[in-house]
Every structure is written in C-alpha cells, then in structure tokens.
Image (cartoon, rainbow, N blue to C red; front, side):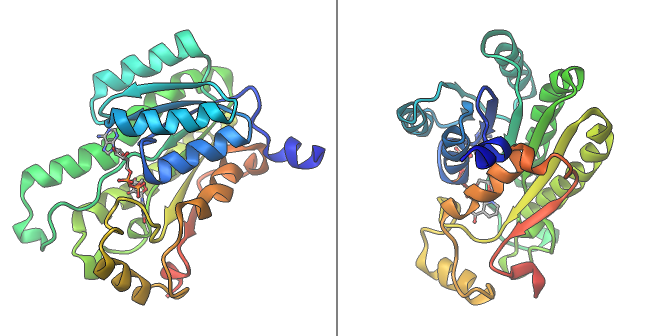
Length: 257
Ligand SMILES: NC(=O)c1ccc[n+]([C@@H]2O[C@H](COP(=O)([O-])OP(=O)(O)OC[C@H]3O[C@@H](n4cnc5c(N)ncnc54)[C@H](O)[C@@H]3O)[C@@H](O)[C@H]2O)c1
C-alpha cells in the first residue's frame, strides 16, 4: 500500500523509547518497529528490556538496549551522545518511562522523598531526554517527540489520591506545549498522549482497581496497550507533520465527563 507507507512508514528512521521494558513502552517499540524504524530501548529493568529487544529483532529491525535510570541526568546525556555517535541520528523520541503513585494520601501528609522521586522519574526524565535529543534534532531541523502523559495530566488525581502523579503528568502536558512552540519553527513536532486506563503493570493487576477504573470510564472498560499503537504511529510519522503541541486523550471518554 504505497499511500499507507508514504504516510505512516518509518523506514530508515531511529526511534528511542524510554521505559520500553514492559507495558506501553514495549507496545510502542513493537509498533514503531513494524512500521520500519530501528529501535533504541531504555529501561531500568534489564530483563524486561531483553524481552522487548528479542521481539523487535524478530520483526527484522535493529534494536539497541540501554539499562539506565532516566532520572539520572548524567547517564541520560551519555546514552544520547552514544546513540548519536554509534547508532545514528534520532528521528523519534517517546518519553514513556514513568511510575505510579507510591503514596496515596492527601498533600498535607505527602512525604518529600516520594514527591521528589515522582518529580524525578515522571517529569525531570522527560526534560533530560528531550534536552539531549533536541540538540541533534535542532541542527537537523527534523524530529518527533511524543510524551506520555495521562488523563491525570488533564484533571486532578481526585478519587485515586494521586496528587503527585497528577502534578507530574500535568507538568508534562505543559512542557509538551512549551517545547512544541519553541521547536515548531525548526520542523520538530512535539505532542503528548494522555492514556486512560490500559492493562499494564501499573496497578491494573488488581481486580478491585480494574473495577474501580471501569466504573469511572464511560466506555465501561479499560483498554489493552495495543489500542495505543495507532496513536503512536500517527504522532511518529509524517501523518502528523502539521501537528504540534497537541494533547491527545485516548481514554474511553474519561476526560469528556
Ligand atoms: N497503563 C496505564 O493505564 C497508563 C495510563 C496513563 C499513563 N500511563 C503512563 O504510561 C507510561 C508507561 O506506563 P505503563 O503502564 O506501561 O507502566 P509499566 O510499569 O508497565 O511500565 C513502565 C516502564 O518504565 C520503566 N521505568 C520506571 N522507572 C524508570 C526509570 N527511572 N528509568 C528507566 N525506566 C523506568 C519500568 O521499568 C517499566 O518497564 C508511564 O509514563 C505511565 O505514567 C499509563
């Protein structure tokens, strides 16, 4: 299908996905590889990374793995320098790595250590990875960055007592807008996806949690990670070349309520 490939194909492109050792990051890596991109995967969990890498390889694409904490600024800088030096210019970055809320309580009880950890992993890592990749994209005047926020980036954490998580995901939404404005004149498109509840390790192994989420979702169900594949391909490909600073909810109607 030439038209399909012209619009959505990613041959000869290099895509970096953080948090690719499980869940959504794994599915994003598979989708980008299926569309023809070579993949660089980063995760703190080496076992998960190896599973993702094996499947990407089976799709006939090149894959390079880095075990690292994306909240470690120095390590992030070293990895992106190595990618540009030894693998190739990065065309696509998916800032996906993230953690759920460890502390479920009100802000007046929130421990500083948990708060800082949340900011470091869910927000600062997006800044660190974007800053490094933009150094090259900016010179080449070409690139796509896709930030994975959440429905909790669009509304407060409310019934989940997810105040720290919602704070970081809201900041990711506005960091997306800020970067989009700065880099749109340089032909770099930067957008965010705000997923609703998808079945991954992030809490959805608990049947009570799933029932709670279903009851708050107009579609009446949570989603499979594969239901985000189309959105990631859209934002990673030339299909979205005139789109920047957009915040796309994929949430079974959650934020429309
Ligand atoms: N699953 C959902 O319903 C949902 C909804 C909205 C947003 N999100 C967001 O999607 C992203 C992926 O979540 P998921 O559901 O796939 O969760 P997950 O726990 O399955 O995957 C997260 C991955 O990130 C990695 N990771 C965590 N901290 C890291 C760090 N410091 N450095 C490097 N890697 C790290 C983990 O090892 C894991 O492989 C997160 O940003 C999450 O907030 C998920």
